[in-house]
Image (cartoon, rainbow, N blue to C red; front, side, top):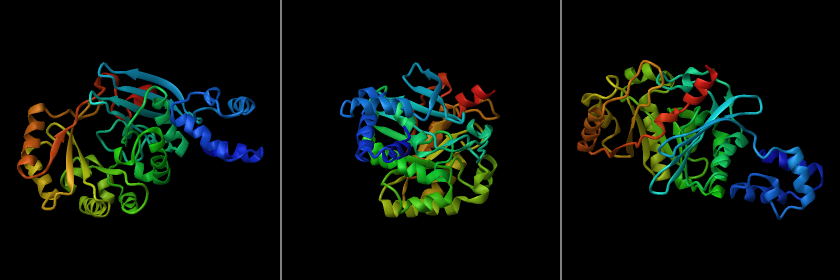
Length: 329
């Protein structure tokens, strides 16, 4: 729902601005039409339904995994593809993976989104409507900006959405912004925006290897990015999540595990999340379970808290960009 367009409509028709708050409250509770908004006058509901779409996004395709993960491919008004995912967990978590851009300009070599043509930044409404789409299905309580795009390159709109998410049921403490290391954005969120969580998609412990798989490292090298994350930790008083994608024969050796520990110690400001790779038709394969466990054990023995992410939605191309890339092929 484009709330700015709603504000404009109300102003042009000399209607009270607090009607926007009423509409938002209904949307945040999962309303899918103006007809459901019973505290709005019937005439206004009909007029809004005729003039304003309930969502800025059109559902183009969807898929549901055997594990309950649900993915949607949307199209914006100018026909840009956007993906979002709802992950359901046995402990009651209902976590959203949200996109901040259509495509991504940073071309990480392992990422399906990086193979797509970059479209544009998404608006606040287009990001929020991904969350509202799934809220209409069921209550949600966690969110991560780890879908298509680099959130720190669209930070104004991402932070605006973070301000709205508690109304849907997603607390700031359950919202994570994930970045590949876009330094200007990290430096901003040290002091700007709500107290959300920060995740760094690192994937390599040294500049030589990281630059090969993540070109952004040429612009913002590891030392500068990790330094900014440490500053964020000092100000925000929360550990930074280190996302580490496990790529067979590329970044999963015991030696690199020790190198990662050296990078993150001595002060333990980080929690490492090892991610089994979901192959997307490129040159990479995922590390074996044995290699992942060896890597995790090495970090733990060095005093680094490390966990292995539970894999979700492999049977529905749930990794970011996969559904959109297939649809565009």
